[in-house]
Image 1 (cartoon, helix red, strand yellow):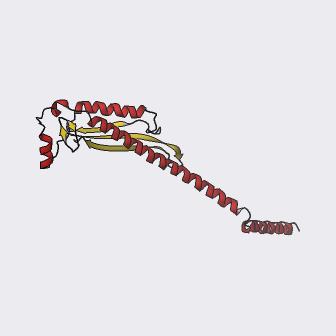
Image 2 (cartoon, one colour; image 1 turned 180 degrees about the vertical axis):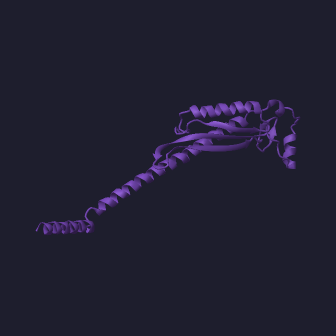
Image 3 (spheres, helix red, strand yellow; image 1 turned 90 degrees about the horizontal axis):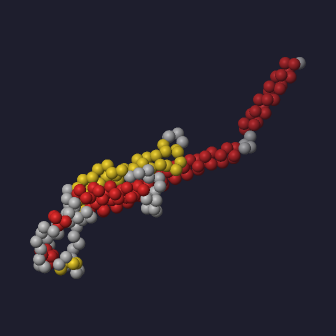
Length: 193
């Protein structure tokens, strides 16, 4: 008799296990929990991507500001060597001759670029993102009429991405610029039109 009771009890356990597995009770909670984790993962990734894009724009603005400050370092000795009269500008306009670029003092430009990048690195203003860890000048080329600088910075993500072990990324930016005379009619160095 004991064998029959054990056999019946084993069959009953198998039936109750099958009924439990076939039952749909609680299946919605598993789906909701799964969707919750997917939503959280998407929010983490989107926050990190948004941080990366905003930091990239901030680095580009810092690099542009440094290049503009450097290109405005006037080489006075080269700028004031030319001979001009009151007819130089009208003749250039009539003949369609382009103005030569404004000469840059490359030695002064490197100092101005480094100072501007340091200001951006230490600034807590609205233009600089606090995720940028510091802006580093990697390359500067100056030929006396144009300036090109390259920078990089590390950006810290607000959330660590699970399974990737990424908590930061390195961003780079390159800007080139030149300083041109604005077209118009100049009389003794004053632009009239």
